[in-house]
Image (cartoon, rainbow, N blue to C red; front, side, top):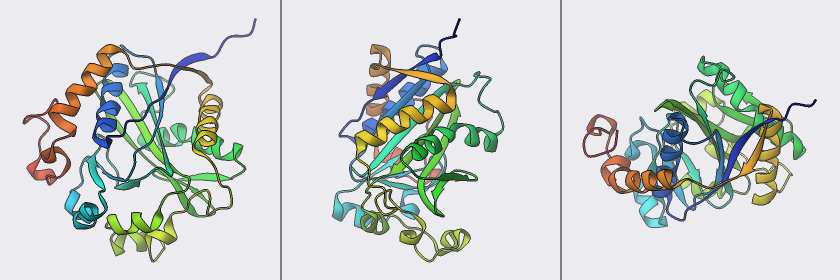
Length: 268
């Protein structure tokens, strides 16, 4: 008798409000970590937003004047790592797994290797040979096509990242502040040399095609099958509360790390 693959929830869920998208990420993490929701893969998009890491200073990582001029939102996420730019040419993916899942290595580098395999499989399905460059970059022909980050809290693991399909790289270069030291460490002179879209690499790809490849890639890499689902009412209520009390507030998104505390006026 053939054993059926474990079933995970698939959420194809985006909101026009980038701050609400971040609240949804944390709400799902909390629900999965508490055993109130199954392991989940979410596919989603933001339009014209800079997303900064949990420990970053918005004024250091983003050109706030350029962001205001271009209508670019500046949003803080719950995970660490560096700032990224999102627009309609960028597809985001997020895995939510209980921290107790024995398949996910406890060691951080090993966990990135394991949880990035689905993206590498997806790119292979699209005809591109990709590799993970530790800690958290997925590259094709030496250029970054996906960056990833993790958060481990509330009893769960959130592993999420971006896939560059047809991103406006010129706008990205305007709204992000990337230090010369960071670029030198990566062996390039500018951010436009460091990153590439799938289109620039000769493999134009629609959002729907990329979604299908990511679902198939993660199904193969993790040995699971995905069933389309929806957020539960408790998850939706928590996402709204997180949005109202945390993610839409300037003091969460823009305050320097030493001036910001989740415990002051935010849900912890």
